[in-house]
Image (tube, rainbow, N blue to C red):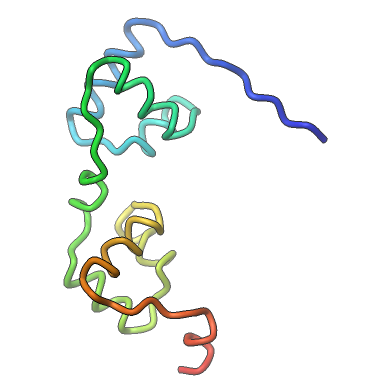
Length: 111
């Protein structure tokens, strides 16, 4: 089976809505889900509209102390990500930025 990408054209109103949603605090992933496109597409569209895109929105949703506590209490990165409505990579970045050693899947089975 071969997958093909379909190029989606956005109206001026849709582009304005995407910019407004992002500036109101929505993450690119959330906006992408709303418009049924990838977050990469949303980032590209925002940059084309002259909007500076940062990774800090997702990080700002995290309570660092709670993330670290949950992780040390054997919650998986995926479970923590769902709790904060962010992607697992955002949680992983937070943990490593705060010096937390990332567990392997075997670490969970042993404890």
